[in-house]
Length: 331
Image (tube, rainbow, N blue to C red; front, side, top):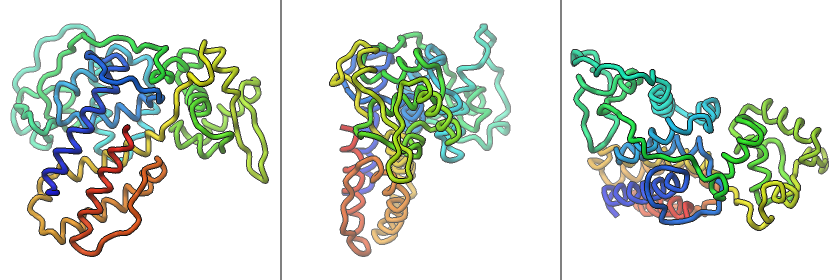
């Protein structure tokens, strides 16, 4: 498979997945599937801000959703999930756009082209005029066509399995306690350590430990000692009754922060068309470097990784199989 073909396949599959997730969460559109896993709102948002650089309509509809539902989103958690400058620039621009003055204002005047000389095009297939680009996004280094809310988004259905994070935030507030409860309720394990909880909660270990201690003191989660290790568990049946569900009706857990970060790295590498000019050997060599970065997170997320690596230029086929395995993890 040529890199251009792999780029096209990965782009299409990830965009379809993102649309399917967001339309189940309130973005305008008709969901094509009903997922029983628990979405991770901030991890999905950060993932979509990258993927939707290939779909301007999805990008703008997610901004519209964020403007309507910002009280359900943790700004701190979104920032904690950012891994690099690109993540921070995308998240910062989206948050600043939502926080901009709500009152009507005149259109930004035409600016000198030099003022935007360091900014880069946000969308891969839609070019923005540097002098008329969205002022908020330009501040964060992105050239984006002017953004207006569509007003089509809705509040998430709190009783849909995919939206259990939002329901728990309504009960426990925006913070580590809600994320701890979500993870313990959805993970398929009898008990887990604080370290494992922290990887999903995406808060500082101190915040997660304080949340675990508070929930345990309140008698709503259990703490057990196994060897010299403190482990935590939750009574799923009792919580299901509180939520008006059966235990079997609870959402399932996925390691979204790890999977989505690996996919962002993959997308950014594939979308760099400079790689189209590389020889087969150099392409395989660079692909191996990318794989070394993302394989640990893919493994953590339960992705089955091919074990035997081919030598030299033949490694490219291994990389194609790795990308296919990562896509398959999206169900």
